[in-house]
Image 1 (cartoon, rainbow, N blue to C red):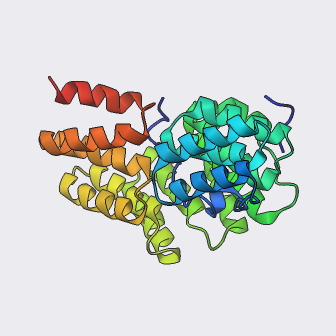
Image 2: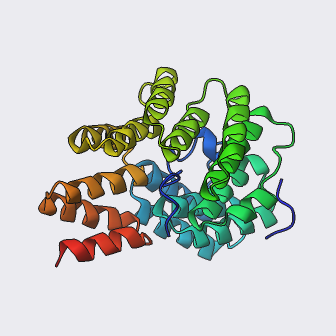
Length: 289
């Protein structure tokens, strides 16, 4: 649980994010329930539908309207926090999710998205100091181990990251997330064969897992096989169009391949929903030279 109230992620973390099936993804806790037929509830549900449809900007606008009607509406606070995580705006996500927790949101609903908000801001120490326990709920405990492993990776505490991901596999035996974490760790250590094996194992569990396909792309990119990497990034995006890190990686590869017009289009599309991405702003400036 959280004790008290309290960019760019390092490449080995890039986009923990976001494997996000917004309402039910296990790494973001329990699904958010639809609100009642009040004005704020109807506006919230507009945001919910927009988010399900992949229109993140419209969702944020709807949820801001809901919060103007009722600043203490917990479902809107939670959902807009998740939407901010998708866009890469960790600070706004943290503010909204902390407020939701102050208003009574449960750990199951808020703790993992809040951890991702910390990761976005590279607040690794804050995460490790505060995101500690799922209060005995096995799935939540496993998800907490995954985000803690990612924080250890961000701090390059690699042995601790490995132990944490290994422990997560025990609690989440049917989830690809700990295996993808181990793949990231292996790639960070320069062990591309191990990274590929962990990614393949994750795809055995969930054949359409976007994170695992993205990881396969990272392995191919580490080998210098840029066309193969692009294929896997495309598959990851086809599986989850909101997977920001796959779209970011795809854009970098397009730039390296000299496909500048495609890269420019990819940057423009990405910045529509990830305006807080300094790497894409830099890349856009390179392309426009």
